[in-house]
Length: 107
Image 1 (cartoon, rainbow, N blue to C red):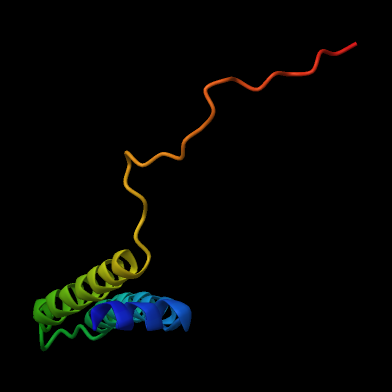
Image 2 (image 1 turned 180 degrees about the vertical axis):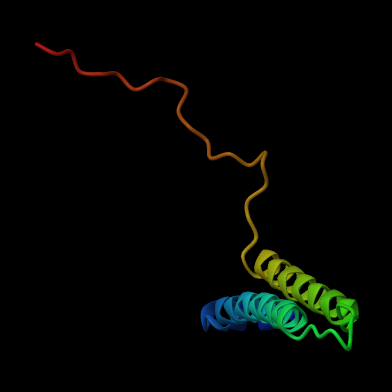
């Protein structure tokens, strides 16, 4: 069953599209986190008042949740890519002829 699914994902290019989609979602989550942090920073900087000296603390729970989400997206994309498109083993080198190629003599 898994081999049939793997074959379908490889031959129809659905697997490569899925890997690209997962990486794209991770990139979107990174940009969203950076923009959210930037908005928080500028809100804290420009929202200061003499009457209210302390601002809201940084929302670390959102940052950690975003970091875990990005890590899961990237790990899933990597695992799927390794499963669909395995690389050859390091010891499996293509056999070459033992004789070196002869260079033609230059005149």
